[in-house]
Length: 329
Image 1 (tube, one colour):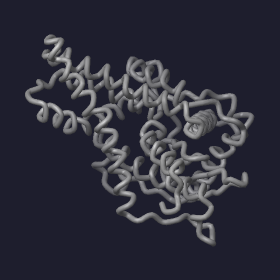
Image 2: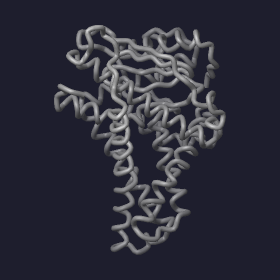
Image 3: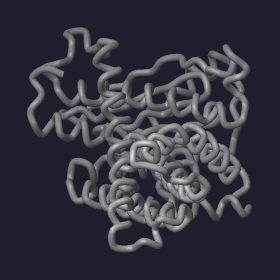
Image 4: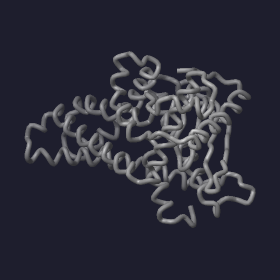
């Protein structure tokens, strides 16, 4: 992204690291992601994005979207579908975030106003950077910190206790990062757009006319959210890692990486079920994520809600033309 100021770079990459917490991914349901000064909304067969430009006007873009499970039925199998959906959501989330950054930089827009294309290696590098940050912050650091405690607390050699200490450290890092980013006004606005996305999804699921007044009546806390997903991943990790004996630093760390897809797939199934059965026992596992949304979602104003509504309307226009299946949670 040439000609970006240092602040713009920092804002983009901070939002990129937060993208897993800001997106809701489910290929048969309505979801979306907060981006820089706007919202991306996704339906099963389309996505739309609306960004508030510096002059107050909206930049809007929408495209059809393929469902991986329709091309390859095995990608719709339990556990596997979670991994596939997460990968698809990350790719689409980066594309939407890049578009929002381009709109915010008027000098990078083409004369025709069309969305700027990104090189494949640039997209790959940034997605790899985001994954690397996640692994370093939430896998390597907690594991290394828990290992270092063994010198002072030999009880942590027990696999279950070690996993519990590691999990507490991981949660502390995650919550601290979310709270610290919320203190930055630019990212706080992203959290407001996150709230607008949730409110709009709730209104759509409630079959309410999508007006700012109607949407504003709904909660900013939604169970089908990336924040809830990540919290569920971290909670399940404690139980899974408790079953894995730790023999050596690098072998123990490698086990954390190798088990991550399985944990992510299982967490997806829990979030998926809890979103449909909100009075179930599994829904209790998503409660910490809903609590954390007090940080990652903030009350939006009507102009921010407008972005979410416009993005969803444009996605639904394509969805209706595609004639796809749409499930209401």
